[in-house]
Picture 1: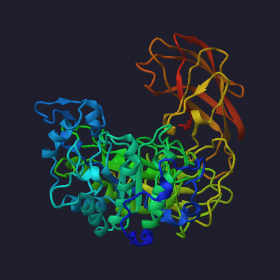
Picture 2: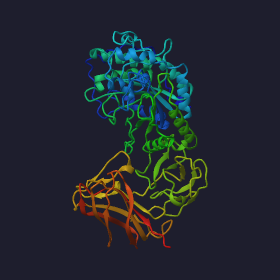
Picture 3: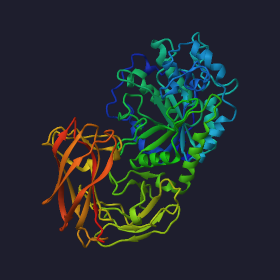
Picture 4: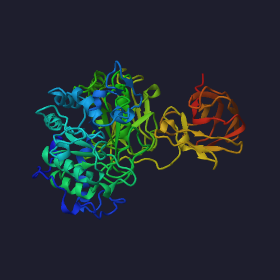
Amino acid sequence: MVLQRWVVGTAASLLLAVPSHASESEDEVDPEMLPFAGSAEWRADHEQRTKWFREARFGMMIHLGLYSAAGGYWPPDPANGRAFEQPQSERIRTWASVSEPDYGRALKPLFSPEPGCTEAWATLAKEAGMRYAVFTAKHHEGYTLFNSKAEYSAHNPVSGSTNISPPGRDLFREYADSFRRAGVVPGVYYSLIDWQYPDPARYRRYLHQHLAELASGYGPLGVLWVDYSSSGNEGAHWGTRSILDIWRTHQPGVVINNRFWSGLENPNGDFLTPDRYVPRGSYSGRLFEASHTLSRSFGYRHREDSWKSPAEVIRLLSEVASKGGNLLLNVGPDAKGRIPEPAVATLRAVGAWLQTHGEAIYGTTASPLPEPPFKGRITLSADGRPTTLYCHLNEWPEGGLLSIEGLETPCSSATLLGGGTVRVEQSKGGPPVIHLPTSPPDPDDPLPVVALRLDGTPVFDSSPYPRQAVDRSITLSATQAILAPSVTATNPMRLEESHIGFWSDTGESVWFPFVLRSPSAPGTQGPGKFDVYLDSAVGPDSGGEVEIRLLDQTIHHRLTPYDHWRDFRRVKVGTIALSQPGLMSLHVRPLSIQGIGLMNLRSIKLVPVVDE
């Protein structure tokens, strides 16, 4: 059971005051590259504390606050209020320029989470296959969903009280108890900034009291997820060392994110926190958690019409896991605590997929290859499980033939998770060829996964050059090109969106080295005739002519302008014949450029010509 992995101790007595060494003049060491400054204990047991988190891979973030009652409208009435198009409805106070006490006076009467709503959240998280959760105990608006005893929270002249749980209830306690009963690890989100607290000189003491109450008054918590630091307002500014001492005392097994410091990818804390994007690769073994939303907003929005489908979430989870990270997926309940039905339906569908494919997500590590030799993702089993390479298929391989090019470790067997006949062809010196059905056995499976059982740790050919796939085709992507100094390869977050652009001079060339198979390698012969395809986008009033040269063969192609620089199309430009295997290089250079540029080149593919 997950809870047993992280419950290390129990809470001690309630700590309301800031420790003496956390005075306003605290001299705190700059953390630099250390996980936590001044605390060898946190670093020493990092692996032990984070083991459950590393295995969990999938968590739920829950944004609930007074902003949920506004739902992106101000005044808070979808029939008569103005709809703010900004995607973060939890910031409605800022978008609408509302001050206190008007903000609280308008929204408090509308905020009424129903009894049992936290039980529904926990049940849904369990059904979705989520292993932990993070709930907004306090967001930037400054209202608290736990019953704080801090003087300003209990009673103040600005908003009356920051505590907004319904009378006789404590929403954070209900949440923590509900999720523990469901076997899902509860964690806490807490905003370090506060839009209503009126006294900056005293705010840090108020912040420390809140975090002490959360650490000591609600039972074991798996994650402390703080937000939001900026340059000059980070680290020692918050009295971070003292906060860590408080949590070390009461929650010795907790995992803490890096946002006591500025920058989503700063190296402090137990894990990094890319927000609404996925990094291009792993962070050299560092833990990270990518937070995303099911819709456009973290907070609830009336009339939301932009929801991620189950397939989008599953592929997002696959991509994050393939890079060694966790996916924290947000839901935004309404003012009554109800999660919108489109979100519920998607999460249940994701949970159904994980029932069959979960072993390819939970307890896995990052792909040993930066880019798979097929269209999809790879994860690798960990923690004593049989060595298994999981191939997540974004596209079903043509003819049902899947080859893991460059894999030198023998493959003893293969399984299509969820069922289906699979046969492994393994020849000496060559990669395994997996014979799948010619089409997916389950056409409704959004992401089929093939599990390859290996006879040891996976070892790959260290050659950096692309090789022929099992169907003899060769794909030369922008990320693998050798560029002339002035040519630019874009560096977006997703590998499949990378391309080469900004061609402005006919002297700017690119080269694509690759390896052609030997005829004795597994599958069909390597050499032969190949059709050449460009996957490119040409902007309006742009284009020109390019030369593609390979050995003594040359293809000239005139580029046709498209509607947009992101309108990528795959076009056949000619045919070449290759008679000998080995390492070679394909050369692309402009012969002429018209307008503002030549093209954005995403890839070149050589497709074998089948003799009639």
